[in-house]
Amino acid sequence: MLEAAGLGKHVTAATEELDILADVSFRLPAGASLAIVGASGSGKSTLLSLLAGLDVPSRGTVRLAGTSLGELDEDGRARLRGRVSGFVFQAFHLLPELTALENVMLPLELAGRADAATVAGEWLARVGLAARREHTPRTLSGGEQQRVALARAFAPGPQLLFADEPTGSLDTHTGEHVADLLFELNASSGTTLVLVTHDEKLAARCGARLRLAGGRVIEQVNA
Image (cartoon, rainbow, N blue to C red):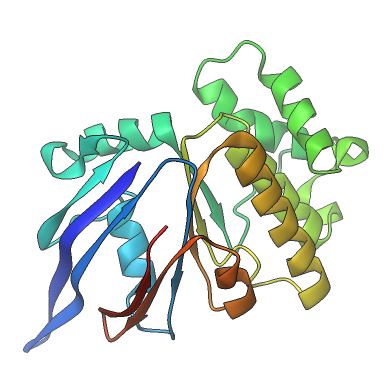
């Protein structure tokens, strides 16, 4: 489902040449889960951006769902992301003027789904928010907002889900509940999961792990 080979990112900052990511290689089969862990500045977010096709590498290759991202232009990468990927972020990124139901409906409507309202309602029920479907984000707790974000990410049926610190802004109890839900949906949907986290307990729940330091892999556990 996801493969990186010799992946690196090189930038020029003022007069300094920096390797912010170097020589990352792994293969992740469909339905598996990968945790990318490391301290701030270790290269986690850079790696996630390269894997998702949000940024382009200085060297190496990424294959997503059998397609080499290097063979696509920016529009092509965007189309591929829209077709096979979902995203969950620490900051939720819900549209404040839309209800929970409308936020979940949005990617379905963009994909031209006539059943967007029905599918969105079903996913809100799956994350335990059927009774909150007409509420806007400002009336929901942080945990509820992240559950809406999970429903929005899973509703289109992505083959692969990228999650960037999905529990980072939540308290411990709420974060554990959201993590339980994330892995439950991952298992029931067969969705491949790539997770960036500082949380070692959350990382340990993934079948594969990459630990970064200074842009390099210092520990690797394959799925």
